[in-house]
Image 1 (tube, rainbow, N blue to C red):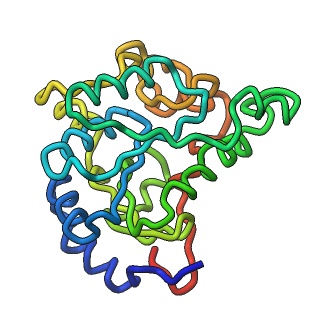
Image 2: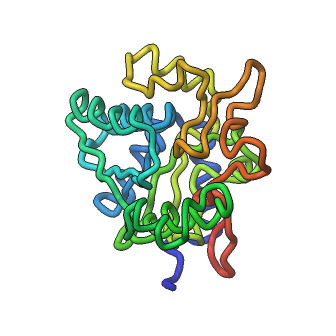
Length: 241
């Protein structure tokens, strides 16, 4: 594993400097700092759609990709086409090495109920590792108020899990901030959001939530699992946060 491209000290300074920055300012910093070594992963959530809109104005050449597990909602896949039509940005699909049929045949059926962590590892984490090879930084759309893991994130951090810098422009935004921005700019979004799905992942592991429930209550509903693992922070000795 290569050495971190950003030290703990530099990360701390940057988080101080960008603490009051707007998401657009954070994105411009990232584009200036990393150039064509910057990429973005999106699940086409409301937050990701906001960032795509911003990048379309700041630098539409930034490579954006989606982890196409084979289990995504049809509405999610259709949103990719609507984004392409609106912004001229074709989000790249990154797929696992096996199709859903091959994967389920290999394991004697679907794993998302029996071993969801392994399913996420095989069909999300491993493809992401391949997708970021050769890049120095990736943009994510997490918000600090979503989960305990995300609450510990910085606007800029060293991501030991994937061995590159992670940039979180929307970290301090709230759900209200996200939707105000979407409505103000008429940004395309997943229609499932209007049907009780505030957070959308793979269809077998995503359910609608009731009034007053946490926005991620529908992810792996009925279990303690609330993360696929992409945004769980790992600390690497000698690296950043």
